[in-house]
Image (cartoon, rainbow, N blue to C red):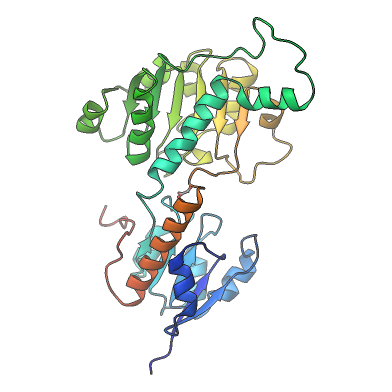
Length: 329
Ligand code: GLV
């Protein structure tokens, strides 16, 4: 019998695929048991000699990790759609495919963007805290009055699957939808009655700006001081993509100076967000702990896809879902 494949998994995963992998004698699984990610040193040690790796967005998978693993490493399978924590070019240079989990989390993540749109506009978190603090003494004409969502203008920055799913939900709220994508997507825009505009126009004309681009060298800091200057004074920024797409210092300044009206963030520049962050002192900011895809069903599907990518990579098959390598575009 051939030796089982050695695999390191950086956290215990949900889903039946992972349970089956654990029971499969063809795999020798090392699973990091903690609730926190393996520290760098532990990661470098545990990958030594593995054939496959299942990782999460909390793990930095760079050339040093690939070198620590060794030349037998056949696949890096990430349980997420975004792979900005993985050095895809370094993997490609070593002929290692990188798997990800697109599709299954699209609607779940769009739901969270909408939870943030509604929570920010209607001051839901602030109002719930007000009740819990015993401050609800009466009904008053402008008590907890926020902004209307129905009939407002939604700007979607990044019109891929998640951006489109965010836009689709806006139809039920009678919104005008503007969108921007680096590569224009006229068909998708037309299908959702969205207007494709320049990035500046989307920023300038939207009441809600939803960030839905992937984090790349091109999009890091895309929403910067300049962008905030263009936005409407009452506009609300929603980010469910990746924190570093927004220049967080510029965001704090824009909120402090009343340049924009509020923010709903599922992601921050550094995660977890420091308790010292000024964002946490602002009533018009809602911060969630990166839970865009966090429904049990979706997280289980993501884990199943990560396992399927791993299995394919180990047996030399094309991955069901792989990230394009920089060379193949
Ligand atoms: C989560 O953020 C993901 O990229 O799947």
